[in-house]
Image (cartoon, rainbow, N blue to C red; front, side):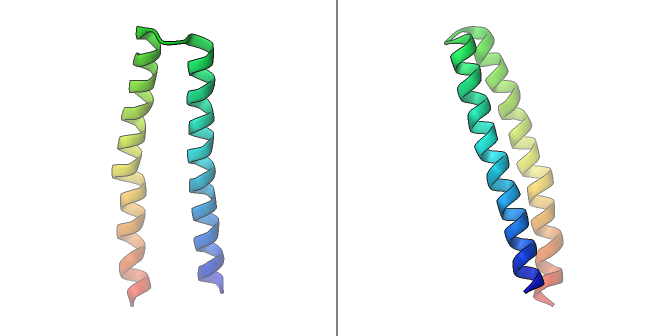
Amino acid sequence: MKLLKSTATVGGATNLYRVLGFVREVVLAKMFGARGETDAIFLAFRIHNIMSRLFAEGSVSLAFVPVLSE
């Protein structure tokens, strides 16, 4: 039961992070419109998200899968 609660907590936090990221992009698009500066902001966030997926979320999966499979 503790594992299920922990999984739900991490999954819920990840979903909240992604929803708030979508809201951030909608607000930026509404404020700045379709310009080159907006594209640069979106690119900066995209690079951050890719690095986050590669290092943070990937390493969490690699760390927990062997432990849970034992």
